[in-house]
Length: 65
Image (cartoon, rainbow, N blue to C red; front, side, top):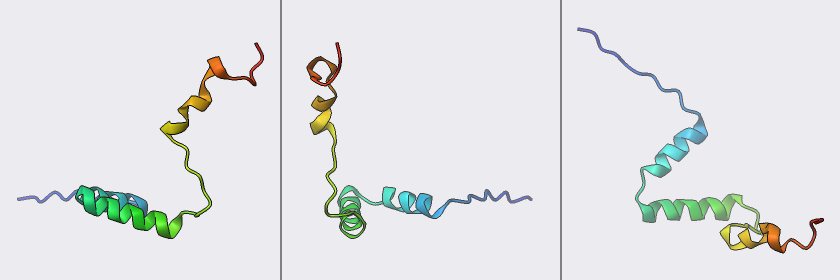
């Protein structure tokens, strides 16, 4: 009888992500909030979908036509 063991070598960030993914939504959000609080600069402005209007070629007053 042979036992086959699959060895996975994950980096530390990969291990952290894997652990976070195993949490339920509420626990995951709590962990992410703690990470943001501890490691993200308070003066950073995060741009997301709310600023997608900025990349509108039709309204771009700075582009040469």
